Image 1: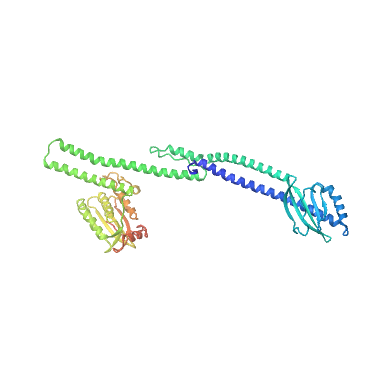
Image 2 (image 1 turned 90 degrees about the vertical axis):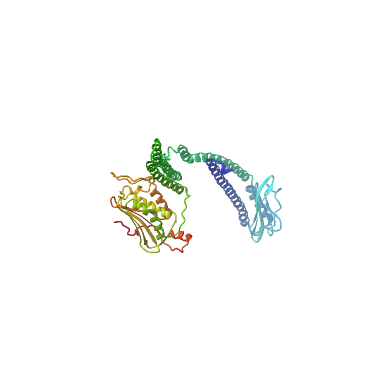
Length: 493
């Protein structure tokens, strides 16, 4: 029930409950302390009366008779104690003194030999009054007496009653005041949150560049503002990435579709011979292949972003991997008039990787090398052992990459350009997909390149044996770092 209430109301309730508990506790303790102090004062006064009787009797001669003592104490005490609760009895049960104020209502005194040595306090009612009494035995000149004295509690009870009423009123007023104050304090404390909420409601997909105000105070509200602004920045980048991805994908798909449409319309405009139709179909086939590659890359990146693409790490022989990739690219490299070679430093090398994604990663790097390497150049695929890891590299003698463009080469749809040089056809998605595959293998793509002197892309994977099981291999993958400074010597000439 309470959890469904607004935070402001909940804060006020908890604050009021805390204040109420504190004030009731203070009121109870204060009342108890006052009551205890009054009891101590009353007990002290009763003891003082007993001591007064003791001093008076001690001051009388030792051989004085009971009648003489009674006359003397009566003469002395009727003036000062006649209206007080006081009576004295000896050990034979004879009255020594009994004030006229209480003679008719005081109960019979306990004999000295029956009274507790330390005295006894008790309360009783007399003449509709509550009396606090002390009965205590004393021994003087070998004779024992019992003294009983008392105080009416009417004033004390009235004081305590008034104190209880005043404390109740004070607690009630204080509780109301604290509740009102707590309500305003909670409103003031939550005002920055309300301002953040109002500002956040203004933000939509068209103005994600807006940021929430950050209070100058270093408190929880400031941390919340910083956190929300960081979240907005991530959302803004994600939206920008989606918009860019959608726009670039639309542009990349529209170009081959437009070319295919134009080719088809021209071919259908008039009858043609078989050779012309064959040329048209050849160009359409090239555009189809290009569009198929683009769609495959788009789907792979979409699955990667959505977490649908999985990586299964198993032992993979490097020579089998290179053989598979080489067979796929040997003809393409020959058609591009490139010197394509492979080099494996050791025999029987095996690494941990995905059987389907690793060939694709190397194919992307080889495709990238073939596009940016002029006719007559060379491309080399290498594998070398570096400690507990195996470093795979693709090196080329191509145009190279300018240092200003290196940070962006893994961005989607970005393609390296050089002034005055033709930009090879492509979608700019290959290296982005290659980076994702490398990341999922727990490694990093390292780029070494200089304009006019070629490029080298390399990454390292955990070395293993073919008997290693995939589950254990996955644990071993994270025990080593990336390629770092252990790159093999894989150069082209």
